[in-house]
Length: 198
Image (cartoon, rainbow, N blue to C red; front, side, top):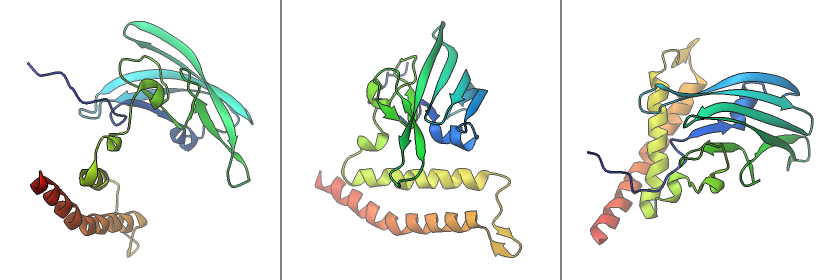
């Protein structure tokens, strides 16, 4: 029988609602929208959950209504959107207002047995890199860049060449590979010295 996990929860494999996704889908323009968010298991790719959403956006405010069922209990609540003035002096951008703590956030998480989407501090969750100390902390971005490149190369529509030139995507991937190769010897030396010191 497997043991229960003893490490603290992180934001990496939680269900998330990003404002960047809403912006990319064109939902942060003034108006009313209805859509469904679908969450998938990161390991198997199987569908985990579906959430019915209603979004109303105005010039300086808005709200997002979430309707779903968790642990056999139906939930229907509203998350406020606040418009915050840009530090560039022109325009504004939206932030979620956490329904539990009232904090502003660009991303809301649902994890740790909480049925609500809330700010990570309200749920007591940290980023994975906050738990990694010393030279091992530098390995995490290296690893994440490698994983993202592997996923990108597996996509069937990615092309390395177009009209006799390297594509922008492929040039960026080559730069990332170069950055990983440059940082690898230093990372390995730092880890080796840390291990031999203990």
